[in-house]
Amino acid sequence: MSVVISVGMADFKTAKSPDLLLTAGLGSCIGICIHDPFLKVGGMAHIMLPTASGSLGGNPAKYADTALELLLKEIAEMGANRTRLRAKIAGGAQMFSFPGKPPILKIGDRNAEAVQQELKKRGIPLLVTDVGGSFGRTIHFDVGTGELRIRTINHGEKVV
Image 1 (cartoon, rainbow, N blue to C red):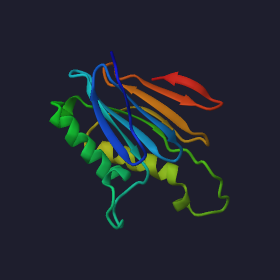
Image 2 (cartoon, rainbow, N blue to C red):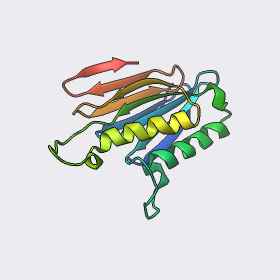
Image 3 (spheres, rainbow, N blue to C red):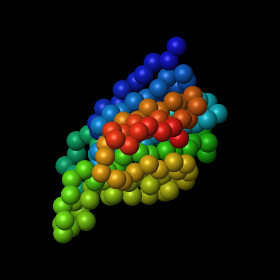
Image 4 (tube, helix red, strand yellow):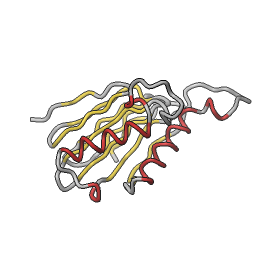
């Protein structure tokens, strides 16, 4: 019997098969899912901002660079091997339009780019990217199979 583990905003959780990880309300935020297909363990982080650099401290799970490091550490403590890890991401929408405004306001794009750069830096292959648009997402991640279910309002549901 599987358990659904909820991941809040600026939060991360790990799980092992047959459990599922869920996060709702991904607008400009990124949901990053990391999976070790051999051990069937993984984790999810709900990232709000690209980098902790310049922040005044606070919650490290809020930022792409620090949240990913925390998530990888906890997955490794579960026995996962970094060479087997695979990633999938969703979110990064532009929920509000700011015509003529500077790119700094395009937080969804900046979040997606930051997460992809952090994964690349650590040599973790990114298998699926479902980012952008102007709509929110809810995601369910099955750490046993590695399947990511992405549900959107007015855009349906898909499993990747």
